[in-house]
Length: 338
Ligand SMILES: Nc1ncnc2c1ncn2[C@@H]1O[C@H](COP(=O)(O)OP(=O)(O)OP(=O)(O)O)[C@@H](O)[C@H]1O
Image (cartoon, rainbow, N blue to C red; front, side):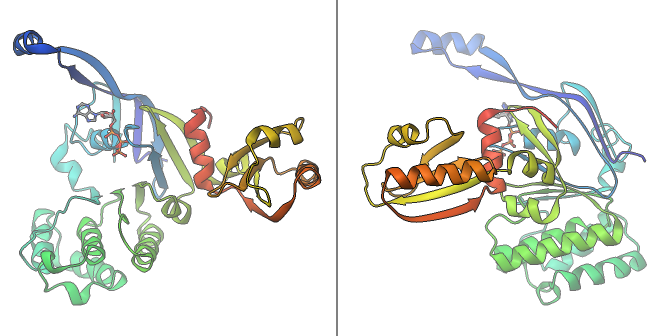
């Protein structure tokens, strides 16, 4: 199968300027500036197949935006190969933009002061969409996103949730095969989030639309993506199934103990369970401590037995480790596998 996205050893370096100190330094800076070369994206490689929904995640500054800008042709790579929909996004820009849709949470492609449908009409011209194709596709999009009643309103009068639904419709107006979404549900309430997620699933099923989703909201990823690509300091540190990530890492349980005594310390707890593989963190109160352990019944029962024998407990809760915690652990340890 032809790849929709194919990235090979893709790299983007930025010059990061530093200022010299003092007046003399500032004067010298006028003529020559000191700089370091910083790889924001550090030789990444991956491929995305048609119809995949991929979560593209990483902490702030990990290199997500920079790589997406290269994938959408806004930035040119320092080195490496990038092919999207069979094209070089930067070199074949005009033809290329006809085949992708982009929603950047914070930026709008709708005109602020004119009615939504006027923006749609302009975009229809820009993308050269026939009346018939518009009707076949957009009537359905407008209905699924429930934006019919908003079409005659100017964008500035819309709430954020209403605007985001219109943005999505606008990005899909030419029925692109590939959709880039950057924080599409940021700041939205749960109902609007659900509506957007259902809509994306439907587009994917109906048209086999490929979606690359960048978000800090892992519940979006869990709801939509089978696969995640995780970046850290410009490198891909995980590329694989979300389920695999969970089974490799999420085998664990967290056991939350509430102690009668609030003088409990990590040291006391470690002494009690010295030979058990357990990690302790304090909860949101002095007397609450959380143990993270592997999902092994004998370890869990030994742990509870030892803690209960040594200290007075007022409550115990056992929880699965959430995907969010798994991902936080991976960031902290920076483990590379996939
Ligand atoms: N135009 C630029 N000039 C210099 N450095 C840059 C530029 N753009 C990004 N960087 C640096 O490159 C690194 C990666 O930034 P990038 O915006 O791609 O990260 P990100 O993963 O998208 O983060 P966020 O989640 O905050 O959007 C950061 O260290 C950033 O400071």
